[in-house]
Structure formats: C-alpha cells, structure tokens
Image: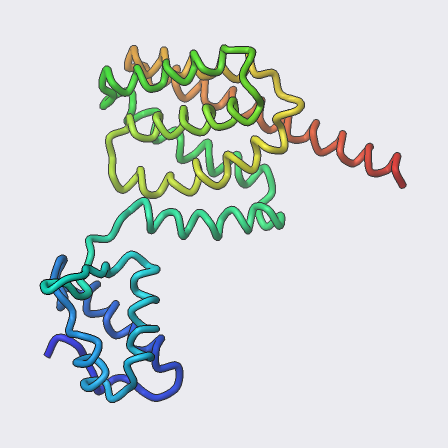
Length: 249
C-alpha cells in the first residue's frame, strides 16, 4: 500500500492527510509525475470528507509538491520539486527575520563572506564565457549614472546571483538563494543612500576580472573588501538614522 491510511487520526485531519501524502512523495512511494487517487478515492480510503481532501491537496500544491491537470486524463500529479520554489519559501521567512532584527549586520556579513568565498573559488575554476558576460553586463548597468537607486540595487542582486551561478554547483546555488534574495535586498535598502555606487561597481569589476582570470585568491580579496565597505556604510546609515530620530525627539 503506497499511502498509509491507517495512520491518520481525527485532529487536524487535512494537515495529517497532507503530511501522509508528502511523506509518500519524499520517500519515493509516490513517484514524480504519478497520478494521485481521485478526491473521492482519497476521501473513501482515509474515511474523511471530500472538502477535507481538497484542503489537504491545496496544502501540497502550495508547497509545489503536486500539480493539477484538467480533462479526461487530468487529476492531481506529483510534481518534481522546484529548488527555486523551495528556496523562495525559505527566503520569505529569512526576509522577515532580517526585517525584525533577528540577525545583526555582523552576522549577515560573516555569512556572506564565508559562503560567497566558496562561490568565488568554484567560479574561478568553473566559470564559462557566458558567466563572465553576465557579470560584466551588470557592471555596465551599474556604471550608468542615470539609473535609479532601485535599479542599481536590482543589478547588484543580479550580479551576485550570476556569481553564484558561475560556481556551477546546484546544491550551493540552492543554499545561496536565501543569501542573495533575502539578505542583500534588505541591506541594500539601508545603505543605498550612503554608499558610493561607483565604489560598489569598482568592487564588482575586481571580482569579475579575477574570476575571468581564474584567480580565486584575488576574487576572495575583492569580496572581503566589498563586504567590509558594506559593513562600514551600514554603520554610517544607522548612525544617521539615530541622529535624525534624536533630533526629532
């Protein structure tokens, strides 16, 4: 039997049904692209109502574990887990934690330095010409003084996303999604008014050049200098904010 119907108890039934099906997917009892039993069949097997089954299926769909298809051959099918989708869920939680101050700037900088250093080392070994072009394209955007701060920050995120991609390591890419998509936008928002955009683009040029020349040591040095600059600007920004609040008080 693929699904363990007898394990379901009555409290929180929809959640337990979803957990039961999720376990079957995760341990391979339900395969990628396999069709789930119909709502009626699930309701009968679990001994629950069809609305409860629908609620359980909605939970699984929200986690990108199943997808629905209409028509005579339709139904609910096990979907291949999407790393980006799974990372996005983690990133949402991380963004909230950063926003409420659960992590301080030193923790964030340390996390970025340690993890992006690995990316720099692998990128120097594995980068392709297309990776270098992606990095250099963002530098060209950043050197355009007419773009807005929002556009500059978005390019900054894309640059580091391209850096991670150039490492050529899928699990690392998944792990770095939160660092790039959650930590960077929050810190960029805080330092955007005090940092020199030309200085940031200059650090990026050093990084891209080192990776292009497959010089991991120089790439990590450029990364460390850039993050030290970010830390200093973060502190400056917070000091200005505190002075402004004190003046208003």
